[in-house]
Amino acid sequence: LDGLCYSAAIFDVRDPNNFDVSFIGEQRSSGGGGPHLRVRQYWADLGCGAQNTTGVFVGVVPMYSDLSEKWESIPNPLPLPVDGDPLSPFGPMHNEEVMRHEFWVPRAVGAAPVPGAPPLPPGVVPPPHIYSPGELSAMKVDRAKSVWPQQALMPPALRKGICCAVTVCNFNVDMSDIVDYGGDTCLSQFVSKGDLQSAHNFWTAWDVERIGLRFVRNSESCKFELRADSPGSTYIYEYDLAKDGFDCSLPYRPVIFFRKQALAVVEEGCDR
Image 1 (tube, helix red, strand yellow):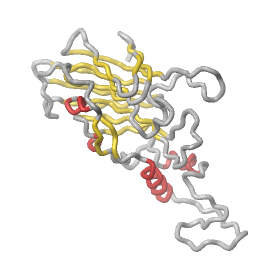
Image 2 (tube, rainbow, N blue to C red; image 1 turned 90 degrees about the vertical axis):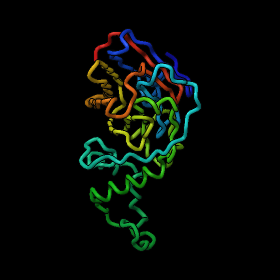
Image 3 (tube, rainbow, N blue to C red; image 1 turned 135 degrees about the vertical axis):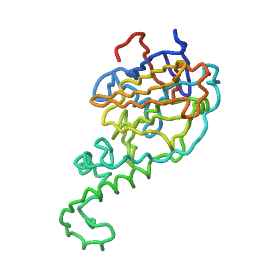
Image 4 (cartoon, helix red, strand yellow; image 1 turned 120 degrees about the horizontal axis):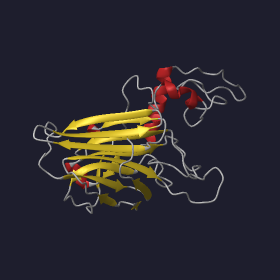
């Protein structure tokens, strides 16, 4: 399935009350060789410049939704992870990496080591400043907020559905040197009724490989499970459609929306 910018596709299923679908994404290689040859990018880098912008939405919507509606601009707050999240780009796990990138930490030579301190005389090299975990986290959050878009585009059909939105994040303020691909982390957001502000957010160190959907409806309940797999991490969240205010009588179907040009591979009977 070729996905062009702002394109979408909805899929029929054999059993509308019980289906299990997995989506695996790839970006086509541009050919050639060298460090910028990318054979498998999964869902993350859907074209140069896609960083910090959701590349793909995968989920379920009512079967007769209008997929051609113009995408809406909605509030897009930077999802700050909860305390102790080991894969958070703002947490202790990334502090060593942060120290190696000058765009995260101010240069020590020729500048005061402590914000707000008076400048040093010319030629005087300040002693190295050891940043505390709290200082590093605050600096990373401030830097990320400066490049995070305050508004995002969302397909209107998702107001009546549930989806996983995947975004590759790059918090480098100066992105002019990015030739092909760059990312600090990958963000998967489980979004209900098109509301990013109440999404369940999952940070992963690697790109998401697979997005799984499981829909089960019977006389007693109507459940929908979202699953995001990346190397070493799996995130699962189950929705009770009746409790969450959805119309359980509607014919729901799997759907995919592309924010950038990409290639999706859909396999029948693939191993979850």
